[in-house]
Image (cartoon, rainbow, N blue to C red; front, side, top):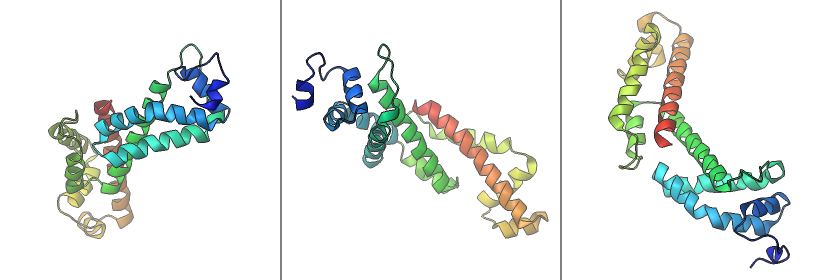
Amino acid sequence: MLLILQHLPSMTVTEDIALLSLVKDGHHDAFKVLYDRYAGALIQFAYSKTGDTEDAKDAVQEVFIWLWQHKNQLQFNHNQLSIEAYLKTAVKNKILNLIDKKLRQQNYSDAAMQQFLSEIPSDHSVNAKELQAIIQLEINAMPAKMREIFELSRDNGYSNKQIAGKLDLSEQTVKNQLQHAKQRLKLKLSHYLASSLF
C-alpha cells in the first residue's frame, strides 16, 4: 500500500475520485497508481485502433504526460466522473492526431494511401474499397478546374509547372488549387476514419 494512501483511511486506491484529487494536489504516488491501473488497458485499446505497438504506447504516454502537466486545471464532477472514459477519449483524440499526421505526410498519393491502408489491422472496421470510393466521390465533387489540376498531378505525375503550362495558369494558382484539393480530402478522410474507428 502506498504510504500516501495509508494516511487517508476514508479513501482507497479503488476510488478514482480520491486518486484524481491526489493527482490534482501533485502527489506522484497517486499518479503512479492511476497510470498502473489504466495504462495497460489503454495501450491495448490504442493498439486495436492503430495496429502499431509503438504508436499505441506513444499515444497513451502523451495522454498521461498531458494529464500530469495540466493537473491543476482538471475539473471533475464527484457524481459523474469516469476517469477511464476520460482517458479513453483522450487516447482517441491522440489516435486521430496520428491519422491526420500520417495523411499529411503521405500527401494523399495513391501509393501512400495504399501504404496507409496496409498498416490498418485486417480485422479493422475500415474498408479499403469503401475508403477508395469515398475518396473518388470527393474528387468527383471538386470544382472542375480543381479536379482537373488534381488528377493531372495525381494520375499523370505532372509537376506544378507542367500543369500551369498545359492549362495556361500561374504556378501559384496550380499550387493553391492542389492545396485546397488535399484539404478537402483530408477533411473527408478524417471524418470517415473517425466514425469508422469509434
